[in-house]
Image (cartoon, rainbow over all chains, first blue to last red; front, side, top):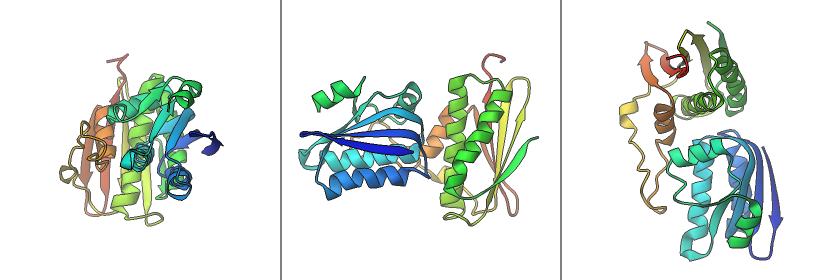
Length: 112
Length: 138
């Protein structure tokens, strides 16, 4: 899994590529914790266009980060460019109702 | 019946996924059905490592599959603590963000995306059998 971060004035765009499972989810968790708990940045767009697999371990990271960002109404996590299989996993877990989901990163970054 | 034995470590998951992908291709499952199977097996193996063994490098996961006319049957065997699925609550998928619990999500996904999920055990082995029907052939 590869993670990259582009920082904008009002938000961070985190791009993830590859497979998010129990082996790699801690790496994603660390990257997102570095933004929220260390840098105090709570407006985050996660670009999932390069993700080819997500398990419940990855879903747990997304929900934990959303809880962290929305605490005290200080921000939120939005998801962008979600591949259909990943979208199906989000819907199965009922997570699609807990995130704003945008078709592409441009509209996501412009909206959060 | 093709069988491989993997170390009970999270970095085995990717290799297990490749083995399952091969099984799904042999069973001629469509792309999304193959993804459902891959996800269910990943969840099952993660649960074995985390709950049956209580961590990595404490045992193995034996993975085998069988393709028949209308279905793919996958069997996982481990030698960890017995698993009682009745003790895992069904996750509340409609609760608010603050109340959202993620425990039990893996088992829920397995049951939703596979057609049969059966837990069995012998004296020293847990046996998990999962079946995916090939809807085109059923």
